[in-house]
Figure (tube, rainbow, N blue to C red):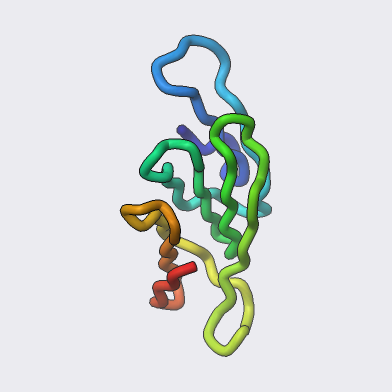
Length: 102
């Protein structure tokens, strides 16, 4: 996967040849991406504070979260994302030095 213009992500399905899929859903540059342990879900995060969960099969957005600063303040840029080993939860880290489990 690679960032196209910052706010979009281009991804290839495994070792298959062909054109990549371009994914949208963020207003600012993509800062992190992770696959679920079973490789069925793709999680992306952005400097705009959004976290987007997609089905890897059809690229449909399943859920979108907004990482707000302390006490519900402004959106905070998300710097990393990960799935729990069982794939049931995600964890994010942001510029405000917080880690959140969703």
